[in-house]
Length: 296
Image 1 (cartoon, rainbow, N blue to C red):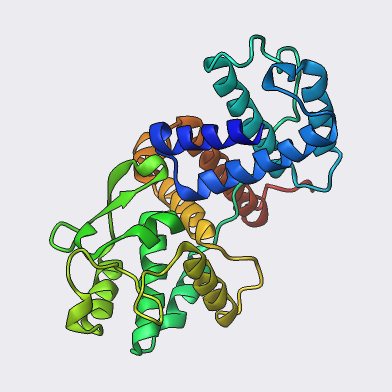
Image 2: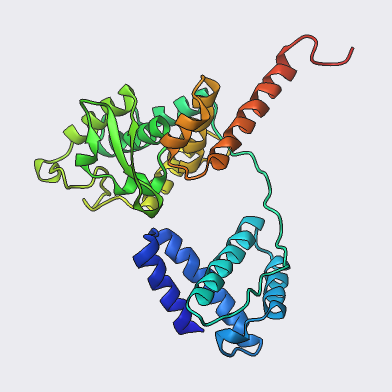
């Protein structure tokens, strides 16, 4: 089974153009399945029956994993099974008639405007690293970019004149997004603090302390550190800034289709969750503020 899994991952890398993060998740999920497979008799892929898949579903659902992780593991196995059938190594569909757990409809966490302002203001000093951190926060909040998209940015991907950033999203899909004036101003200031040798168009937009490209994990640590410095009690991640961007864009009149383009969502349904978040926020404000929102 191990060789088939490796072939499947090679297929994903070459034909589906998946990101390294996605490939790592698939690899981890399928290595877990491979361990289950070996422990329960193993054999050729043709032996993968509905009974075996049901046993695996039961095992992952009874584990201490979060629901999102369970759903991802099941989705990874479904994709692998589809690949085996396309390759002619598996005739039937062992998932036929089986139901996995339903996905929870969770509203995304986001920051209020004041919380976002407090977070960004933690980089108010003119020191180069503080400027970098502020620029990262401004760009995340201004564009709704994912942290992986931010880490891939090169200087040439920023059109300062047009106020546009070129992002490369999931599956290396390219999209152009507008950036706010404040984000562009801080970016100019940050780049102005760097040495001339680091300013070629092909150079990374954001550098770490050693002068290399800042990783997406590094960006997450910077956001976490700045949130702590700002005194924010809630858990703040780069994705929380993406959620904040989306929620506040909708709250100020942006239509869902336009937001879908800016966020780089393939499916409109993914974007529509923010409409629920906006309505939930409005309802909370209404219940707190309107004199007739409560019973007498």
